[in-house]
Length: 337
Figure 1 (cartoon, rainbow, N blue to C red):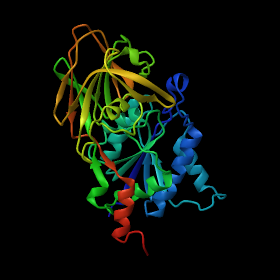
Figure 2: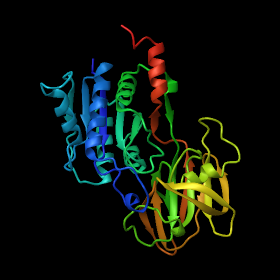
Figure 3: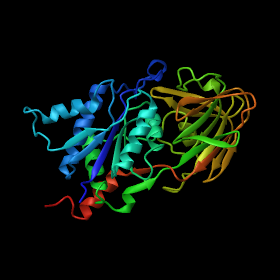
């Protein structure tokens, strides 16, 4: 019988953008990511996972360093785990995360653990198909990934991979499908922002004066970044797990709301108009020169006649609820011997 396989995609570039200069974003250096991965590996082995495949990278060697600290004779409890890098070229771009996810799907991985922010997980979502994710926050705004102890994340992923959890431990996230001139070209997990900035440049969106429109895949109060606009505009909380997005047009002439636009950056924002979005609702954005930012990073440059449409879809990536995974595994007796 094939042993359950868990994948690890740790982005060495996450948590380094310009928002560390214009706000107070947390710096997740690669030594901290290494420590997180080390605890993930301990959690995986504790629940019986012995096979791991991971995305290689030339920047730091996060997973190999984590393994060195656990396989050497001085380790508190040396691991009996086989972790191998994926056979793939390393380009040093988001395409690495997408390619790694696709390879893990082909290898039959039962779960993928990611270390990164919203952008990293958007890249992984392009290639992970139906394999559930355990996304750990090491980015900037971190709306999609969760702040979770690596040991627990590893245990949850190790229980999901062989099917030792109940269905309620996994839910499907929404996504925003972006079409340009009638053709779908990309998608976002959290937000699509139409900016007046004409070039991709430093990618990150941090100056609200350049924002023309914001489309959100979810409206939750405890988020940060442009997605926080939706939470501040809620007049009633959507039912749990019911997909509810929002289209927002900022404007100085409208009423103001208080939002955390970045870590340590709280300000009042004028809102000209907004409306709730349900699944399959489409936003037809106003044309004009500018850029489209996906999950906080400018990706698409627009011509004056470009027509952008954004659809709220229910078929985003599957995500593991770590607490529910551990609870249902315990109820099924997998945490006893």
